[in-house]
Structure formats: structure tokens, C-alpha cells
Image (cartoon, rainbow, N blue to C red; front, side, top):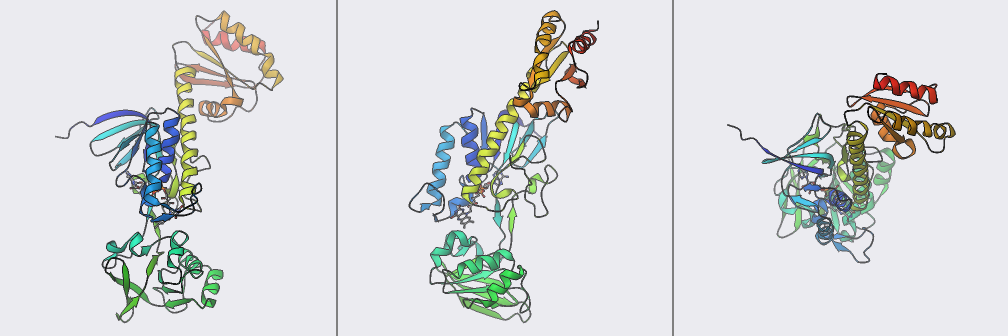
Length: 418
Ligand SMILES: Cc1cc2nc3c(=O)[nH]c(=O)nc-3n(C[C@H](O)[C@H](O)[C@H](O)COP(=O)(O)OP(=O)(O)OC[C@H]3O[C@@H](n4cnc5c(N)ncnc54)[C@H](O)[C@@H]3O)c2cc1C
């Protein structure tokens, strides 16, 4: 018999404890939102595997990835973020607009979800690959690791834009940049400009029709065995490092069917980090964007947290104020700079007094709460002032033409059944 899972309530769930998720946590915690952060392996994410981070602003000297991420974590904890070291299995939408975050033992019911699950570079699957990942010789980021290979010899695996462009970048540091390409001689997948530059660069050398068969070395990677895809011939190659550019896989499998992903599986967001589902945000490497770095992950995390905070406040205002209560409601949608809107304010006060037993009148300032109005009516009323009538907790009507004192009076009377 399946045991009923325990369900806990939080304001925000952050899925993923890398730079993006931790920053979202810092902002949510500081905004006093009850926040839980889920991390399935290592708090700090991908950046913890990086030996030195030189380009994150604020530090004159290179920082150990792990040290930098510990600071992020401590800061998030200081603001009261709770950490749960577990794998999120699924996110489901609940009827009341909240979301259910499912883990192995417990479900978490939350008002907003921030997805910060990052991604992973695609691996070749060759022998011993796991033994040399990241700072042991197999790298995935030329921007990050090129300086380490000054005057050394590296092998690039791949032939797309990333492989060739990052390869060209590496020629500024390395003595030799060899490129293992699976295709026949002369065929690359990269754009034409990059191809021409690469073929003209004396430091670049192409090894056609090859894939990696095995990695070898003591502590660090020393040798790669390439295999010719046509003849099967094995080709040992002494190298100081290998860069894999054969694709990057965002960790979005569990969100398929929930939110919109692009053709490569990245989460599509707008500038507020909103996905196509209200109250679900995506930040950092997992979203479709042009630069995947700690500095950009941090910006995303801050934006999403503030957007989530506003969303939660709006939903609460909507539910607890504008749509709540037994009495019907007359919501006066107005804008302070609009003279016509201002003229009718005393009438609203009068109606509030006159019908206070049977009707609640609320003023909704669109300057402050435009998105609340769009949430209520699906779109902005075509003219202001406007009146939204609410009966039994649901919008009944939106009136935005011919509004004057008399019309307001008439609407109020209709609502109270006079
Ligand atoms: C070798 C290397 C060197 C780099 N060097 C630099 C550098 O020098 N400077 C720089 O700015 N950037 C560098 N980067 C890039 C940088 O690491 C990333 O841009 C950054 O880590 C992105 O942060 P993130 O929070 O979006 O994702 P990640 O750091 O990938 O974090 C995502 C986290 O989510 C967790 N997760 C995934 N799925 C789930 C789930 N279902 N449930 C719970 N948890 C889950 C993962 O375990 C992971 O910890 C480097 C990257 C690599 C690979």
C-alpha cells in the first residue's frame, strides 16, 4: 500500500543550488519569503568544480570555485533559506494556482517555483572519461580554462560553432590546438567565418574521421586514444588537456510538458525570468540565453526572486482583498494622473458609505497594480476609469464606457439588487 506523502507549505521553492539558485535564495530570504532550496548533489553547482574563477567581479585575485560558492551558500543561509539535499522528481500545478514540488518522501506546496537546475556538458562516453573530468584534464569551457593551457597542447572534440570558436580562442594561449572531427576531411558544422579562420590558423590542426576511444593518465590526463571511424585504427595522442564541445544538455527532463522549452531543451523565459506558466521562473544555465557564466546566473537569480515576490504579493492581494468576502464588490480601476478618474473618486467614497452593509468598493490604482488588473480581466480595460464588478469571488463584468457618477450609482444598485 502506498503511504500518503507528507505535504509542507512554503512561499517559494528553488530547484537547484548553483550560483543562480543560491542568488535567488539570497533575494527571496531577504524579502522574508519562506523559501526552500533543493539540491540533489552539491550545493554550489557546476562552479564548485572549477579550480579558479577569475572573471567574477569583486575579487582581485582568482577565487577557488568551491570557496566562492560556499560564500553564496552562507549568505543564503543567513537570510533563512532552508536547504533540502534531495532530487526534485516533478512539479505539478494545483487548482488554486499553487504548485506542488514532489520529492521522494515529501511534497512541497508553494506559491512560486524558481527553476535553477543548470545543465551538463555532453560527454563522449569513451573509456575512463569519468576519471579525468573538469580539473583533471577534460574541460568544457575555454573562456574559463584557456590560461591554464598557455604553451601547452590541447585537443578539441567537436566541430560546431562552439568547438571551432572556442578552439580559435584557445590558439591565443596554447602551443597547438588539435581538433578531432567525426566528419570527412574538410567538413565542419561551424559557421563559414569560423571555418575560414580555423583553416587559416597555423596553430590549428584537424584530425578527420575520429572519435575518442579512451582517456589515459596517472593523476591527470596525459594521453587520448582516438579511433578512426572508417578504418577502426587507434591513434594515441599525447595531450595536456581535452575540451569537449559536443553539446550541452539542460537539466529540464522533469519539466517537459509543464513549461515551454526550446528545440534544445532550454527553458524559454522573458526578461523577468518568467516562463509561460504564471509563478514559475527559470534562471541561470538552464534557460535559453547567450552567456552562461556565474555573473549572468547571479543576475537572473536576483530578477526572478524579485519577480516572484511581486507575483506572490499580487496573488495574495487579489485573493485576500479583491476577490474575497461575502458582499459583491465594485472595483474602481483608476489612474492618479487622469483627471476623469480623479473626478469620480468622491462618488466612490459616497457609494462606499451608502451601501456599506451590502457592497464593498475598492480602488485599484493601475499605476501601481497594472498586472493585477490584467490578472483580473485577462487584459487592460480599453479605457479608464473602469469598473470591475465581482460577485461570489469571481469577476462578473468590466465596464469602461460612459462612466459617470450616475452610471456608478446604477452599477452599485444593480450589484446590491435594488
Ligand atoms: C569547467 C567549467 C568551468 C567554468 N568556469 C567558469 C568561470 O571561470 N567563470 C564563470 O563565470 N563561469 C564558469 N563556468 C560556468 C558556470 O559554472 C555556470 O555558468 C554556473 O555554474 C551556472 O550556474 P547555475 O546555478 O545556473 O547552474 P549549476 O551551477 O549547473 O547548478 C545547477 C544545480 O541544480 C542541481 N539540480 C539539477 N537538477 C536537480 C533536481 N531535479 N533536483 C535538485 N537539484 C537539481 C544540480 O545538481 C546543480 O547543482 C564554468 C563551467 C564549467 C563547466
